[in-house]
Amino acid sequence: MASLFLSRQSVEDRKLLIKKLHEAQGGNCFICEKEVDMALHKDSLDIDHVIPLKTGGKDDPSNFALSHASCNRSKQASNLEVARILQRFATLKEVVEPENRSPNLGDILKQANGGNAELSFKQNTGFIEYTLSDVGDDTIYKVPLYEDDLSGFNYFFVKLPIQYLRHDDRINPRSIGSNISKLVEEFYLKRPQLHVPLAWITSSEGKSAVYVFDGQHKAAAQIMLGAKAMPVRVFIDPDPDTLITTNTNAGTTLKQVAFDKSVQRHLGSTLYQDRIERYRKETGRNEDYYGFSERDLVTFFKGQSREMKRYILDAVRDGITSSQDNKLRDFIDYGGRGKERPLSYSSIDKTFYSFFIFQEVLDTRLDYGAESGENPRELETSQILNLMNIIAEEIYIGKFDSDIGTDKIENRLQKGENFPHGHLCTFRMSKEEVVYNWLRYVQQIAKFYFINSGKPIQEEKLFQYPFPDQLWENIRRFIRNLADLPLWVNKDLSETVFGGKQNNSFWQTVFETGKSPQGVQVMPKAINLVEMIK
Image 1 (cartoon, one colour):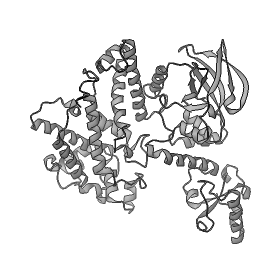
Image 2: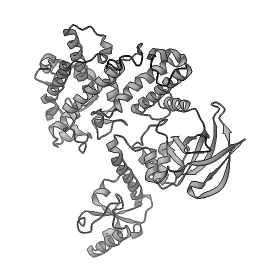
Image 3: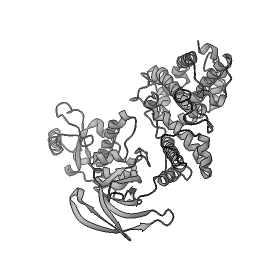
Image 4: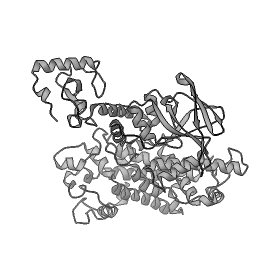
């Protein structure tokens, strides 16, 4: 809503107001909190209401703030105080981005000078006594102790300064998603928290950090708004395996929380490692013993055979996704379908992992062929990584521009906007239904190579056979020649072929015939795999 107060000011009055706001804000932009230079920025400054008029803000200088024009016009909320908080979060995202991750509760706590104290406590019959000495409060507090009727875990409720809270990224590896903006706005409007965070402590030494494993988004939103203490339900010495399993089931089979698939895979991998440790312990094996198979684990944990199979496969997926050697991961959006990266984790899961990871448990020992480089799972992992790196080098690196992103590319093309050919090619080749088809051709190239060389293989275990250098060269040539096809940069196909989401069979028809199912000529001729590897 326009400001009548500002519209009635003279040029000199406006200059004076800008000067006063500049001084009151310490010379910084209200939103991004970076320097405002009165000379350099004089033509790119905005005065705006901190609290919008439509939500009850006053139209006078007490409710005005000075900001860079670019910050004000790209702000994530109409309320400038909320916009400033979300801008701090955006800055935090940039800080952790080199680690190929998004911020979590631990990062939010660190930013607010939290997560650096341990709770001193002692457990008595029916109650807990504790003190907050690490923050200068030596008062002895006493709260009731409860027992969970189903799990048998002891717990208590307490309001703790944020200095005592830590993020448990093992039980809950989730990052803070974009929906944090809605929670920040909700709490800013003084609406109450309906779900307290869940945490745990260990009683072995009478002093412990408090590890939050559930409710991190609500906790993060309140801390971002300046909360200095948080109500928490704290479990004492819980079985971590039970908590991990509960958290995993909540995000998978029970669908109680919105876990993206990459988080599910990471939790599954954690549970797989826990099951290996339990197997060793319960069968009297040494901690470095690997003389058992995936099948042995499934058999041992009889009542969890389906879960065990998922944990095993999740461990393979997570090993590939989290590998520091994975050049493709910089181009994958792990939290869904974002607007900055061309590939979604879901697409990777449905193509690379579904096609190339053997989907059944193995009967070979976990340490089989480890020293000779013939271990089937290790070979499978390393070769899928190598394939991803070839694809990253030929299609993505130096071509995809994250500043342009992926938002409404085809619509913008149709309106006359131009994009670098490399970026457009990457964007179009990354569509899930397109990836699905051209990765199938990579699979066929590998199969035919082994057939032509006379080597018998089990096709479903394709990537557990070592690929010769010539096969890798064939795959690289195919990817390179595929990326050079004119259709990826043909603007005229924006409305007919790339204008909407197509299915897998649509692109299968295009690649096999050169035409769409509707008869639109997409390529001069069908793809010939023999020619494509030359």
